[in-house]
Amino acid sequence: MRFLLDTSAIIRFARGNRASVNRIDYLVERGEELGCCDITIAEFYSGAPYGRDRRWDRLMDLLDYWPTTRDAAMLAASFRRDARRRNRMLGLADVIVAAVAVEQSATLLTANPRDFQLPGLEVEAFP
Image (cartoon, rainbow, N blue to C red; front, top):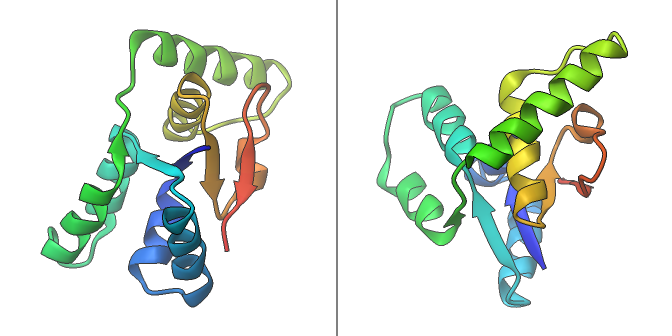
């Protein structure tokens, strides 16, 4: 299986949250494919308290990088537009992450599953 880690999942892992570390370790041991995208990298490093850190670089190096393609960007726009029609506001970063996950046929691992209730997106709550 493929999993895209949302920024919330990366942050919990980086902070050493035991349940998060165990979940990632389990997925790695099973040989699952773990990835991130441009949004998760930018969000993670922009919130890092001391800027870049080699430990975090090593963490990112373990993840596959899945870029935001034009098709993913268009899907993100569709997610956001459809949500707005239902009077629901979705953040641009969240819909881009979701669209990359859909395009990559990946399950999104997130600590905020309620933020990602979108058609075609598989979501797993991350501890």
